[in-house]
Length: 333
Ligand code: OKP
Ligand code: ZN
Picture 1 (cartoon, protein in one colour):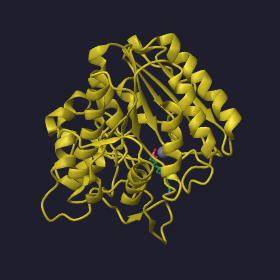
Picture 2 (cartoon, protein in one colour):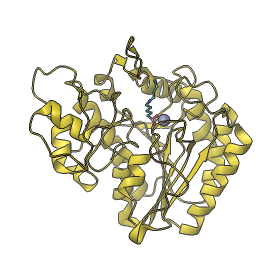
Picture 3 (tube, helix red, strand yellow):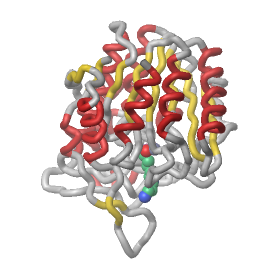
């Protein structure tokens, strides 16, 4: 199994997070230790052949993203330090402003996704990791594991947020689309709103997501069952929200429903957005999925019998994230 990985992600290390508590910033959960823990776990178990991604350039992001959006993200002014907006556009009212900070507020949808001077290296490295994984799947390798960091599934064509800057899984799906229909299955704890949005009107990419009920879980404004796609893509989006506290059996029942939808769509290949934040011990997620369940998820996904690219999304318990990924890849292989 190819494991695509670059340590460039270490260059992006947001120290603190604002989560609505105006009196106190907290340690940011999306930290370098996450990916380092996964890489260490795979290496120490001798799982996979590690391979560096082939570098990509800004223009390679245009298959999914708006040009002005990525150019802002990747080239904030020198010496600006950590950057985030202090004002967010409601785009039905908004004109696009000129200053970099105000422009960030045009493209960003939350307060938890800061851009640091070295973040662009990590963002491009993460996207390249997913793209190289896609190329390997096209070349006949399966499964392939893209150890991406930062994650991507909350980023849309022209917006970022949720610790995500560009959409790694969507970039990979676009690349694999050259070989035919693609399904994206998102099993991160959080709804993959960005990926859904990118493919919402497409009938060549199916999107299915199993996640915590957005009434009570981030990203709050999407991931409901009545979101089923639009125009040519009507019927090509499927959401399976779960109550907080959901355990293995109910989780797997929802996964089975998602997998039957994918089987009916009959894709040439599958991209799986894997977050381990549904794990019972995760500090961000509030579902109750066991370590063993990750192996069973991998098994059931493998039984579709399609080539699979796994793209890493969330998962915040640095002590168990490696084991959860190992179990999942075990089940898949
Ligand atoms: C990104 B991915 C915790 C607040 C959480 C943002 C969650 C982004 C998750 N202090 N808010 O889907 O794992
Ligand atoms: Zn998540």
